[in-house]
Length: 445
Image 1 (cartoon, rainbow, N blue to C red):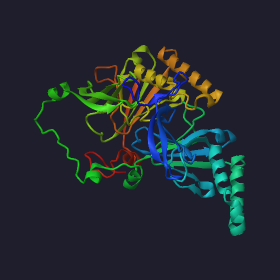
Image 2 (image 1 turned 120 degrees about the vertical axis):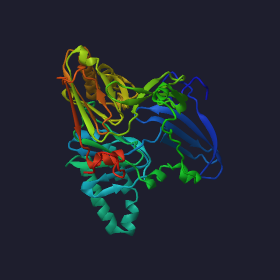
Image 3 (image 1 turned 30 degrees about the vertical axis):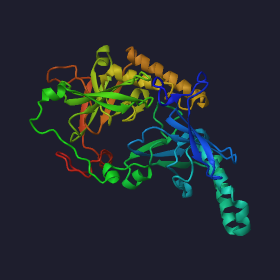
C-alpha cells in the first residue's frame, strides 16, 4: 500500500478501484488453491473493518466475511433494550461474532460465536432466530415429533414478539465491546436502552486472542521506575517524549508526543498529541499525572455569559458530561481526556455529532426524524456558543481528576460554580479496578 493513502480507506464513488490485497489460500471445500481478497476500509460505527472475499476456480466455492479491524476496546459491553413499542423493533443494531443474545422473558439465549457478526434490526434478530429453528423442523417432525411440536410453539411465541403483541427485553452481551443498538432520539439519552461496561476475565481475554507478555514469552514485564531524586520536577516537565503509535482515524503508523505540565490551582497532567501525516488528523489527549483521587467529584457550572465560555476545563477520560437543559449525556470515553475551555468542550461535542463518519451511523437508511433531531440539537448548541441560551454543564468524574476554573482568585465561592466530592459506589470502584487494591483514603462500601 502506498505511503500517501490511509491504511483504512473510506469507500466512495470516486474510488473506482479500491486497493485490495490478494493472498493465495487453501479451499476448505475441495482442498485446492483459491484466492482471498482483503480490503481494509471504514464503515459508519464499525469504523475500521476488513472485508474478506474468497473464491476457488477449481470447484467454484465462494465465501465473504467481514471482521473488525480496529483495536479491541478495553472493556466488554452489555446492552439491555426494553422493547416497549413497535418502533423499537425497527432499531438498527450491530453485533459481533462474540455477542451473546438473550431474551429473558422466554428464557432464551444464543451463545457467543454461534452466529457471524452482522448489521441488522431488532426485528431482524428475531427473524433470524425463527429461520434457524425452522431449518430442521421437517426432519424433526419425522424423527422427534414431540420435540418438533414444542419448537413450533416456541416459534409461534417468537412471531408474536416480532409482531409486537407484548413488550419484551433484548440483551446483547459482547465481550469484544463492539456491539451497538441505535438510539432513535440521539443525542438525547435513550430511556429504553442501557449500556453496562465491565472488565473481561482472563478466559474472555484468551477467547479474543489477548494474552499478557508473561503468557506469551514466559517472562514478566519489568518496569524501571524513576528513583527519587534522579530527575528534578523541572526536568520531567520540560522533557517531551515521543513514541510510535497508530493513527486513531486511519490506522497508519505515526508518532505521539507526550509532556507533563502543571495546571494552576489543580495538579500535574500528561498531555499527549498525535499528528498523522497520512490523513492529517490532529488529536490531543490529557491524562492525570497523580493517579486516582480518594473521592469522586461532580462539578456543575452555569454557562450564562461569554466569560463562562472561557473557563478552563480538564475533562478526564473517566468523566461523564451532561447538559440537563438539552437532555444530553456524553459517556466517559466519547470525548476522551481533554484540557480545553467550556467553549472548546461544546465545540468538540458539536464536531463529533457533525462528523459524517459518526453522526449518522447508518447513512441513508437512517430515519428522517433522527436526522432532523440531530440538526435541531446542533442549532441548540450554536445558541449556547452565541450566549443566546443559558445551560448547566455537569462533569461527573468518579476518579476525581476533572476540573473547571473558578472566576475568583480569592477564597470566596464562585456563585456559578458548584463542586461536590462524593464517596464512590462499589460498582464504580469495580469499574476502576480498585476493589482489589488498598489505596490511601479508600474505604470499600
